[in-house]
Length: 310
Image 1 (cartoon, rainbow, N blue to C red):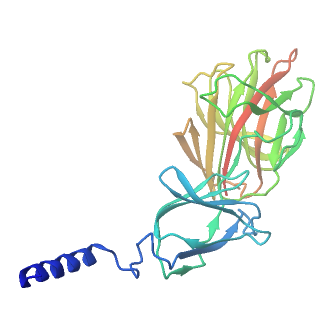
Image 2: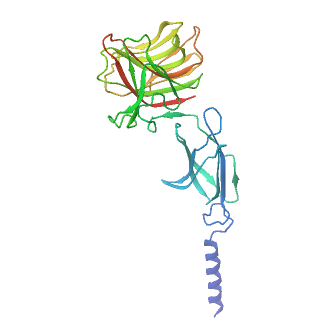
């Protein structure tokens, strides 16, 4: 072989060697030294969360999946290097998503902790007829899990939390979350049934301490208002009387409370904000509320897609 041919072969071999990625490249998916990712999942109270599903995803494909143990721990011991989306899923919580998480070879990350703080109740895993689904406590009225297949684009189907308020009852219908809250965001999908009473009020109770002390965001057929009930006496704090609400239609009602400030939203659009400077209620439970003002008929409503951000 001539000198020129030998030189050409050497150049070709060097070129090919340069095209082959070195095995110590931390982004090389064929690197035999894999990446490591682990952490602990916590619930909204800061306790270990068992049974949460953790996924490593590239695009729409779940490349790795595991679950947290009784101490909330999860582990991916052998991960191909790459750029992943980390997804955390747990029943009764909103899904956590972390995009563009780098997992390199030679790295050992054991502090990628997951904090599930946004509670979400769509009642899909609850048994029909249940009066107190997970996280809720029935105080007044008649409540049960039931089906509502209508308007699938407006709420999660098929299960909802239904309420009936008896016009002969002294109290309203109310089912509340079991945890006491201070500053938080709370919202729910609400639909008054067309077979309901001709006169009704429905909404969300906030910082409810007892039936004489609470805030209430409510709507009727012709208005939406914020009311403070203190020692049994109602005090109007804000009202919008240019709105109308029809039966058999879903409305998403929510509020954000921080100290004495309360911001009210309808379908995720802010309506008004009120600052309660006169003996504000600073803690209590949040709940779903319905009342019949028709002395001759019951009021019925369905609730769904309850979100809570403590």
